[in-house]
Image 1: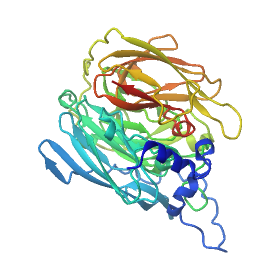
Image 2: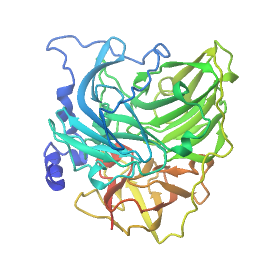
Image 3: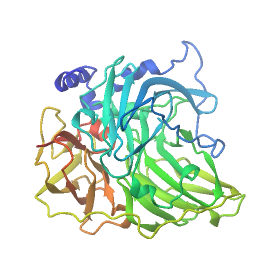
Image 4: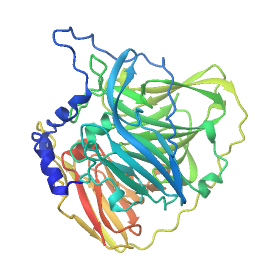
Length: 485
């Protein structure tokens, strides 16, 4: 493993990456098929035809061994070729050849050990987003896995149930590596969750949402800060359909986009029952007509498809973000094709959260990005990320209230804390809505907005990140380090 400072220096040497991102594309160029010299360029791919392909389920990863209570996995990061657009092979970066990556099912109290094998031509670092792990397994952006080498990650799973996910976190490469496919899902469950009569088995479906821009060859086109990504993917397929029975389904939604925000509505603003968010179940379900997810956020929904006749269809729509409405306004379609028995229920009470302690410390964090200019900088408390600098000193075992402000007039941000799940106390001076009343690890901030959150730092000691989870803002410097001692 190279040092934090030497890794940063090596990355900067690729050609001004720290400021512009311009040096990122050559680093992954080996994965993209070049058009033969002299050959005519294919016609532009255009917007894929909607609702013509089924949405696949994420493949469930199986352990290769069990040691005591630990499940042991081996996962290989490698290039692969998939058809995002029919008939046009796309070169992607993957975990185990899957786009998006596989699903790991884990249990509280049963550790997971993963040997990550990097068989790409770029360095990687794997972060299990939302997990409480020791620093050596947190996916620090400077603790990279060099091409051709392996690294073992230990996940103790000593926290309550939560819909976690894993993605690349290599500094200056995290945005492009994740965009090209390095993300996967990790569902942690416990006795509290398993005891509830919620939809399960084939009626619990993980859906990873994201955007993309595809060039005339069907390749994933990447540019830093690209606001023209105009194709929406659900589990790697543009605008798929998914066949359902006329009964309740539990939909586990993840926004794995680099920076896009979704506002999701079903049909004609039909009711959605939200039962959970980033950190697992809410204390009680609530019914809404929309769910907002910024990059990295998750939502746990129950949808009762029995209200639709067999043979009918209903579209999941998006009403947020930039791009042409015909491209970003619809996400996927659910087709009701059969009846099925439904013993599932949505309990009025889902879990109990402990009361928040009196805070020991209060601190303020300001997110800001230059608005205007070709290569805007991005800052936390007016500082660009420096992996050798400690920005916040936190005493182990204490509870802190962080007041986080988006100082921009136009740019959106969100905020992610490593290691801990937090509770949102206020948004814009008001209590959070029901969908944000549970445990969270990522929170959206509109321009000029302030969010107050509280966390207890009683898991592990060491150095951990906090940053904007719009990856390209982090690439530009909107990250910082806290030291817990």
